[in-house]
Amino acid sequence: MYNTKLLKSDDDGIKAAADLIKKGEVVGIPTETVYGLAADALNENAVAKIFSAKGRPADNPLIVHIAHYEDIYNYVTEVPDNAKRLAELFWPGPMTMVLPKKDIIPMITSGGLDTVGIRFPSDITARRIISASGCPIAAPSANISGSPSTTSAAHVMNDMSGKISAVVDGGASCVGVESTVISVSASGMITLLRPGFVTLEELRSAVGENNVILARGVKESMPENERAISPGMKYKHYSPKANVTIIKGNFESFVRYLGDHFTESSVAMVFNGEEKCCPYRCIAYGGSPEQQAQQLFSVLRSVDEMGIEQVFARCPEQNGVGLAVYNRLLRAAGFEVVET
Ligand code: TXA
Ligand code: MG
Image (tube, rainbow, N blue to C red; front, side, top):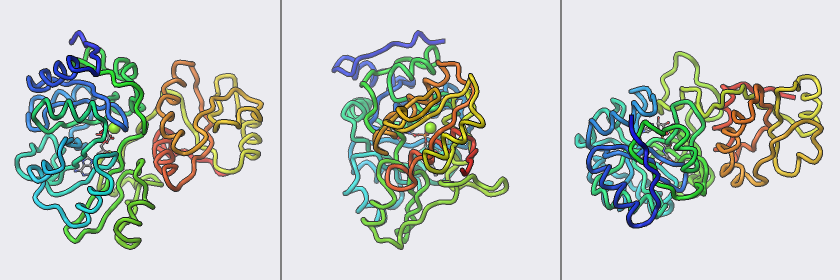
């Protein structure tokens, strides 16, 4: 049991966090996407502590974070031209590239795979912590496995207090959903494994329409017998304790559906502005897809504090950043979608 310290994102806090990481401990750190559970990616014991703090299945690989672009060459065997191009455009930033790993990355970090996801975050505090630690940083989202991700230090404390050494408070995460994860083949073909703030459309316009494909499982559930290319995609995820159902269709048919199904322990999850026209108890969030992304996990977490049993959620758009919101909400709903 740890007495989890809350550190500031000032010089002292960053030094304290880096010293803990150097000693093989786990620290909650801010990034521009969501908070991460950071440990030395090359230290097997430290990485094992991440898996146990989260309760994460051992076959789900961790992303390795770097603070200088050139460091990628220490951890992957090859960087295809398209990967270089995407790095130039979107790094530092909310994008992770999966490439064949070098032996220096322990199998525990890569979840037993021969590839590794590399991310160069833009968040200044994250980069300062990585640099001061002097090692690559393995960091999954800082939530209990299966729960909504964490976008504030308070969320991390809520899930991780007593389980890790410290949390660095860097304020609310500005993107709010996890990084876009892509795998890049030797020939430069890109597969989008997890949508994020760097969108499918942006990837396609960077490397060509025909060079980017969407992995199965991004917009639908994986068939039981199919192996996910990205192990994280097969799990129910991001879920509050309440049951979540996505209601497709326009606002009028959404309200009609509520008329037949809403109870005292339900809440309607609607987009900003719609609450004025919704005759039922509502939580409204984000007007634009970007704002929806920023607020999604906070909203899902607040549902449990309200003691809600059933969430009826409006369906996000399935393009641009909306695709990332849809992908997360779909998993929170355990793929329960109703067409109206
Ligand atoms: O924004 C983010 O990416 C955050 C912050 C902390 O950087 N991290 C994050 O990590 O979301 P995590 O572990 O919660 O999600 C990583 C996802 C998982 O779905 C995992 O299966 C996938 O990326 N992934 C990681 N390495 C992979 C690999 N080598 N091959 C395929 N998928 C991989
Ligand atoms: Mg996660």
